[in-house]
Length: 200
Image (tube, rainbow, N blue to C red; front, side, top):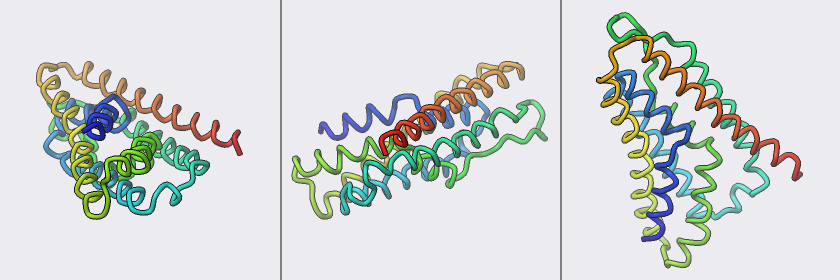
């Protein structure tokens, strides 16, 4: 039970994946972003399978900072896409970028904090609670569904809030605020990279 409390408390806290889900809801993309949520869940399941069956040796601790670098670069790219968009929901020709399966998959797979969530679960909690064999898959699947549910919940909250906002100016301000939060998340990932480089 402590595994689920630990993972859910971390996954449902604010972060780049949840910020993107919130922004999708605010811009009226909640229903179109379902594949993004699935991508997030699939990335988590893939990571749980790798670490759950192969152990932490597959990605040494001193290699995490390289993942942080790629995660930071990808986060900066997605934040740029958000910052450059001009949202006017009253105009049907306005193009709002819809988050795809691969956006969700890569942002989660390249998020070093996601890996840092998984490592203690697979290397400490699974063995101490005697989760082995096929149980690793089923428990990891449940946690991954929870991971997909986090940005989905944020997106739903954004959709509810978005219905109350009618002014285009506020939509664009909120969109830019979400983009800036993504940049801050990327800066933290970049900091993890630089800190890891100093340890080499």
